[in-house]
Image (cartoon, rainbow, N blue to C red; front, side, top):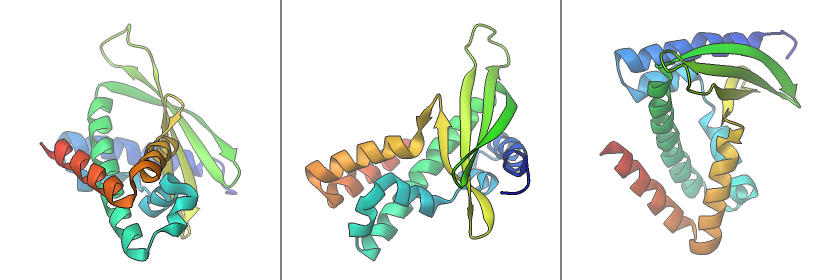
Length: 173
C-alpha cells in the first residue's frame, strides 16, 4: 500500500468510534459507518465461484441480507468489546491485502484469556476497507462460505435466502 501503518491507523480510528457508537447509540447504522466494511466484497467472497452463477436480482437479495446479518453480528461483537481493552500488535501484508492484528484483554476478569481479532483490509474504489474479520483465527468469510455453499448444494438459493431471513428475524427478537 506504500504507506506503512495506514491500515492500522484506519482500524485504530474506526474500532473505538464504532464501540463508542454502540455504547452511546446502540444503533447498527453507526457501527456500519464506523467500520468501513466492503459489504459487496464480503458477499462475493462468502459465495466464492457460486456468486457468478446468480442472477443480478439474486446477488442483490443475498448482499442485502448478508449486510444486515453482518451488521447485527458486528453490533453484538462490539457490545462485547466494551468489556475489553484493545491493543494493536501490528499489521502484515498478505498479497494485496493488509491484516491488522489486534488483541483484547478483559478489563475486569483477569483470568479471561486474551482474544485475537484481526481485520483483513483491501483498497476498494481507492479506499481502504475491511473485507473480512478473523476472530480467534476463524475467518468470517470462510465460515459463511462453508455454511452457504452447503445449503446451496443441498437445498438451493431460495432455501439459503429463507434461512438468512429467519436468522435475521431471530436476531431482531
